Amino acid sequence: MSTRGRQAEAARNDLRLLRAAHEVFTTQGFDAPVSAIAKAAGVGMGSLYRRYRTKEELLQRLCVIAMERGAEAAEAGLAEPDPWEGLASYLRACVGFRAGALAPVAGTIEVTDEMWRTARRGTELADRLIARARAAGVLRGDVTTLDISLLIEQFSRPAPGGEHPHAKQRLLTIALDGLRAPGATELPGDPPGLEWYEGRWGSPP
Image (spheres, rainbow, N blue to C red):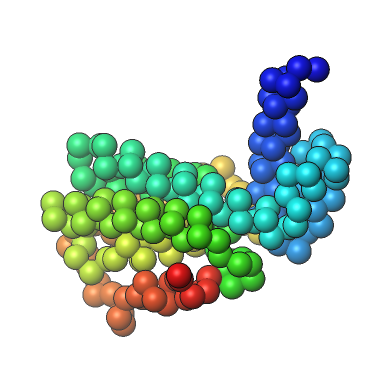
């Protein structure tokens, strides 16, 4: 096999591993053995360990990918001319690929510089998206970026007994209506702050 062919095969194996790892971890729990991931991906343990020396490295890579996809969804939302539709499409996209499914590993793995950088880029883009919707008068004024992030986390959790084909979309539609200005009920308490949110993962550099 040529060098290019081996590189292509390695890339395919890596993609299969990452997809399998996300599915195994988010459905079986983060204590699931890496052997289950290799089996689900259809690759040998040697292939897995050549790419990811530890389970932590694999989880770190999955977190970066999830945050990158979230940032891409925010950029797509900002490209939408309508501020409300931009925000709604961002939420739908993040819920669709379960952007917050890895949140339970917060505090259990080391946060790399790449993770911090990617998270902050995603937060900055989401801030812009939400500020635009608020300025347009379509998002209730007491909703923060972290409220939206935590909402995405809630929708990213696996449903016991499997997903109903329409349940999540119905609930997301209800949630989106609840985000619309002006808001019928005042939100209780102070909103969560960035220090608390990032503190779940560790001390930022």
